[in-house]
Image (cartoon, rainbow, N blue to C red; front, side, top):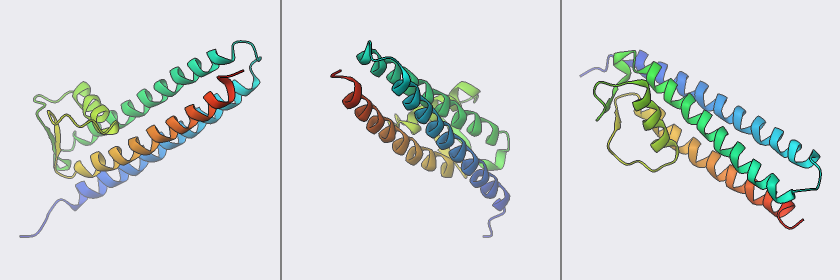
Length: 149
């Protein structure tokens, strides 16, 4: 039986690539700006710099989760791209929740992508894993630099 929804797959792949590109850019620029800011701050309260760093990293991840959530929500306006099992009627916050549990690789299983949108979910999990570990590495390096001063 022929498959008739290649347009949905192409749309999902295109939106996924745009979302991944955007969140990686945001993460890179956010960490770069944070690192520069932390290095320029006075040496007083060095340990506090680490705390600020944690808050900024959490904010970056929250923005990135929302970008993926909005992307899923917009894609699901096109019915052939799929749906989210366990979320009926589907709303923006369900999409952000799906994004959060996928991005963080928690995957509770109470909501699940169905159809072409699964490509975005898989890519979102990989991207989230990479960005979370990047943040952990960044935090470790900043703690090593400022914690003992």
